[in-house]
Image 1: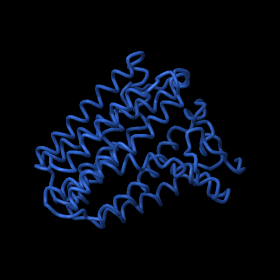
Image 2: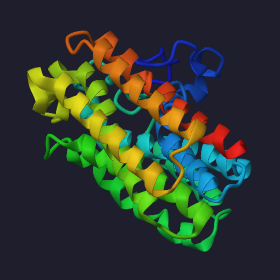
Image 3: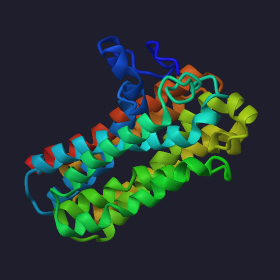
Length: 308
C-alpha cells in the first residue's frame, strides 16, 4: 500500500486542510471530504431550515444549541457517508479521472482502516442524535437505509441524484422533529423541496464526470437529460422554490425576513441557471458550490425573523 502524502483532489476547496495536516491524516481528511466542506454544508442546511422554520412557528428565538448539534452531526455523518461510498466505489473511482486519486482507489489506505474510520464517525453522529427528543431519535435512523443504497444506484438507474435527495434533504424532517417532537405538513413540503433542490445541484455536479461516467458505465441525471440539462435543472429549481414556499405558507411563517430569505433563494436559483455552462466542468463546479450561499440566504432570513 502506498503511504506517500496525498495531493489535493481536483474538486477540493482552495484552502485545503491538506496543506496543514500531517501526511498520515491526509487520507482520512479526504475520506471524510473535510477538504471539500460544501458537502456537509448541503447536508446541514435543510436541518437549519427546518429548525429555524419551527422557531418561527413557535414565535421563539432560534435554538442555537440544536443548530450547533446539527453542525457537528452533519460533518460527522457526511464523512461517514462518503467513507462508506468510497469503500463500495473503490473500483469505479479508479476508472474516473476526478476520483482515481481518492485514498481507497489509489491504495493509500486499507479497507480495514477505512471501515474503522467509518465506525468512529457513526459513533459521533449517534452521540449527537442522543441529545434530541425521543421522536427524533426514532426518526433519524430511517435515513441510514437511504444512505446504504445510494452508492449502488448509479449502477442501475439514471436517477441516483433522486436517492441522494432523499438522504440529504432528510434533515428537514429531523430539524422539525427536534423542535416539535412530531412531523406536520410544513416539514413534509420542506423535505420535498429539499429533494428537488438536491437533484438540481447534484445534476450540476455530475456534469464534471460525463465522459468518464460513460467509460465506467455509471449513470446520472446529467447523462439522462443530455442537451437539455439546463432546462431540467431549472425545472427542479422552480419546483423546489415552490415547495419551500408552500412550507413557509402552511407553517404561517411567510412574513418579514423569512419571506425575503425565500425570495433571495429563488433569485439565487435563477442566477445559477443563467451562469451554468454545461460544457465547462469548472463552471459547473463553481455553480454547484454556490448552493451553500443559496441555502444560507434562506436560513439567514428565517433566523432574523425568528430573532425579531
